[in-house]
Structure formats: structure tokens, C-alpha cells
Image (tube, rainbow over all chains, first blue to last red; front, side):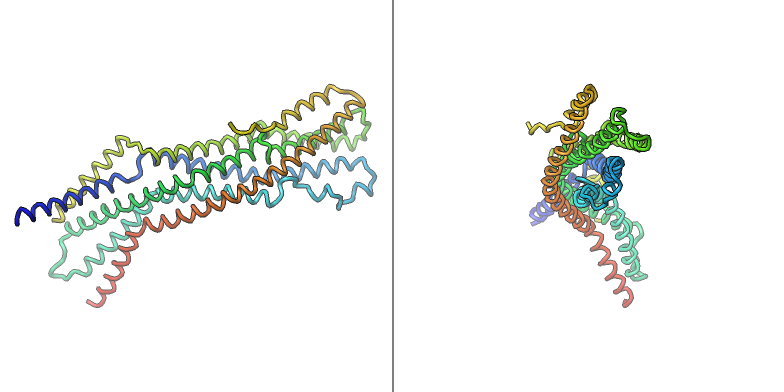
Length: 308
Length: 98
């Protein structure tokens, strides 16, 4: 009988430790934390720059189209030139209409939220929440125990530590489990959005940035025409043309500067997403992860001894 | 290998070189062709952008759903704290009667 009891007790103990070992091993590793941080930071900085630039491209397109139409009309008869209901005035934003811009801004906002939420889930905020709840719980236990049977302070602290430890293991396990599922499932969505956005910002992508540069080229062409001495335009028209030429040039220059940079940062985000995916798909444990795990096991053993 | 995109800006640059070298009537004609080229390319781009809008909409819908899942997961992770808080509240209520 005693033998039986002994083996059942040992079995329970073994199951208990196994479950701790399995759970304890399921916290986010150092490399996963790094990949998450990298993805989050890249996403937030990309989102800020790209959404600003999207609005700026739309505003500049309107400005360039308006300048071009006015420049072209400057050499036309007054009645013809002032016809504000002419079809060209109705499409000043070209391909940058509100629907096109808002769907892309929405895409950028969704990526930013995704990154921020992932970081929030991976953060230690849940540990702080657990600490606070444990502290309140201990106060309640202390208040409930009668004066002549007050729980020993050392034991009370040990109970608190044990709650924090086991609660923490459970929380870490749940956290990692959720993050892993989310990252493995959403890889394709992030990649699709990155590819679409990168094309939109790449001047050679044949989408928004290309259309924006073409609007600049169109304005420059009109200005060039008016500045051509063979065209015999008035000084007034030539001054307007010169100002239009500079406006066009300022915008065209973006094909060498900010636009390819944004396209590059979007592709970096896609790369960061791949690395994040890989870090959760094939787990790599560093020395720090092993030390962290060993500390968890030791802490479990210590609390078990105190609480006996 | 994906489909290779046509680089409109490179074609336009080649046209610009031609315009710069031309003179008189030929220059005027080439400018007109350049303007027409830009107009037509913009039309093609507008069609491609329209197609992309649908791809965007599908991916956004899916990602927004994922974001809601993460919000639920955050609540789920804090379950232990919520349970502890509930127990604490109950104990405090009992404490008032004892």
C-alpha cells in the first residue's frame, strides 16, 4: 500500500514537473522577440512616411495639373481660357482620386495596427497586470484571515510569488501560442499589401508614383514648349512657364529621392515579416533562452519546497 | 519568374532625348507624340490601379479580421489576472460580512 502511494505520488510529481517544463519552454525566445521588435519598428516608420507621402503626391498632382492647364490656357482667348467647367478642370487629381488614396491609407493603417497589436501582445504588460492582481489578492487573503490565525508574512509572500510564477508561465504560453498562430496565418496578407504598396511607391512600378512623375513630365513638357524661342510667347507667359518648369522639376526629382526610399522600406518590411515568420516556424534557442528556462524550473522547485 | 513590368519612364526618357535633338516642325511633332504617350500611359496606369483596388480591399479585410483576433488574444492572455481580480472582489465582499 505504502509502495503504491509512493509511486502514485511520484507519478503526480513527474506529471507536474513535465507540465511545467513544457509550459516553461513555450515562452517567446530572444530571436523571436528581436524579430517582433524589428517588424514593429519597421512597420511604424514605414507607415508614417508612406501615408504622408501619399497625401503629398495627391496634392502635388492637383497643383501641377492646375498649373499646366493655366499655362496652356494663357495663350488662348480669354473666354475659352476661363471656362472652369472644362473637362480638364474636373480631373485635377488624375489617378489620385479619394477612393484610391483612402484604400491605400487604410492598408497602411491596418499594417500599423497589426504591428502595434503584435507588440502589445508580446509586451510584458500582462505581467504587470498579473502583479497588480496578485498584490490585491494577497491583501484580500490577509484581511480575511482572523487575527489569531494570521498567515505568516513569509508564507504569504511565497503564495504571491507562486501565483506570479505559475500565472506567468500560463500567460507566456498563451501569448506565444496566439502570436505563433497569428504570424503563421497572416504572412500572405502582409506580403500582398507590401507588394501592392511597393509598386505604388516605386517610380518604375507602373502605378501611383509613375503617374505622379508623368504628371510632372507633362507639366515640364508644356513649360518647355512655352519657353522655346521659336514659339514666340510673351514675356508674361514665359515667366509663368519658368515657374511651372521649376515646380515640375521639384516633383520629378522625387523619382530619385524619397519615392524609391519608401518603396525600399516597404520591401524591408516584407523581409522583416518573412524573418518573423521563420523565427516562429523554426524555433532557435539561444543560451539566454536556456538560462531563462533553467531559472523557471529552479523557481518552481523552490516554491514547491516552501509551500509544502 | 513574375511578369516583367514595362518601364514607362525609361521610354519617356528616350523620347525626351529625341525631342531635344529635333528642330523646327519635327520638334513640335515629337512633343505632340510625347504628350500623347503620357496621356495613353496614364490611362493604362488608371486601369491597373483599379484592378489593384480589389486586391487591396481583400487583403485589408483579412488583416483587419486578424487585428480583431489579436485584440481577443490580448484579453485571453490576461485571463488569469481577471480571474484573480474576480476572486479578490468576492473575498472583499465576504470580508465585509465576516
